Length: 390
Image 1 (cartoon, rainbow, N blue to C red):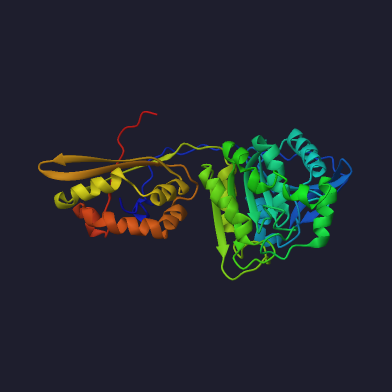
Image 2: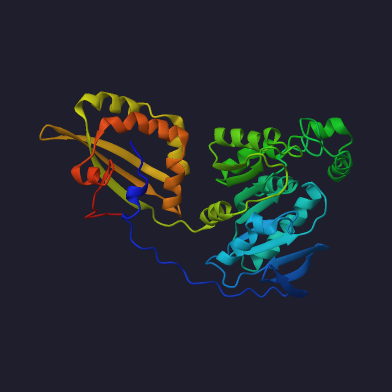
């Protein structure tokens, strides 16, 4: 089948969704207040650690929130938090020091989480792990998978053998390695190197909980090499059936973090933290050339895994294609449901995928567009929904 892309943009077969009203402000009872990137910030203390919450001008229904676990003031505008605040997210941080996601730090994170959710924030957070913050985010998520909706890792450390251990291609940091041994209570290098709780080791819990991952990485990073961190997470998470998206920055090192336009990360987090909405339904028709019918049937009897994966990553489900002969002519009828938040962006992403483009080169010659679709340079013609029983 060919691009559903842009011919569908004007045709959505879904009833409008009625959204809940905005949330009232939360009384934080803070020690003091100031501003952070133009938004009001509340400061308080949790288990002896400095903590803060930044509130949006108007909170989204359900009070979704993002949590930067380390380096909250590094490359901030590039790393999504201010943009999420503008969309209605709260944003939080608790300072546990340079503790590498060690058990004592995780306990403080859990205490902070209880304070936040008891005041009215959503039960699931979007975690932000910059650099070594990846250890903090993944380690806490692995012990609390029911409390996390998504993780945004930016050049994240996913295995402390890589950094600060320096046991691979990366530079490492001997001073930080010594500090890590102390934080975890390891007796020596051997015990640390055998530790089974690095992010790359605990992904099954996250995949089982349906936590969505997005990473932004610089391909020239020699501090936290992609091959020893994100690449391993990506490969293992896909094999576990988890959802992960990786945005590569060619020629970029460990810094700067984030993106010049953090929009892709913002949209990803918005989608993964929003309340589920009814899927949008689409249906189309096109002709099937008799001399190409056997080839078309064979292709769809054995669809390419990369094509199926891209369809799912573009939030398409319940996709089926049916064949029917009418008055001696063959026709194809297609139906699918879209569960994403930005249909146009997903269709453009699909159209840019090399594997999908190769697939279309196989399927396009098999199809015979109806006259109205052909006149618009399209293959599939829209069908109008007359009745739907949910």
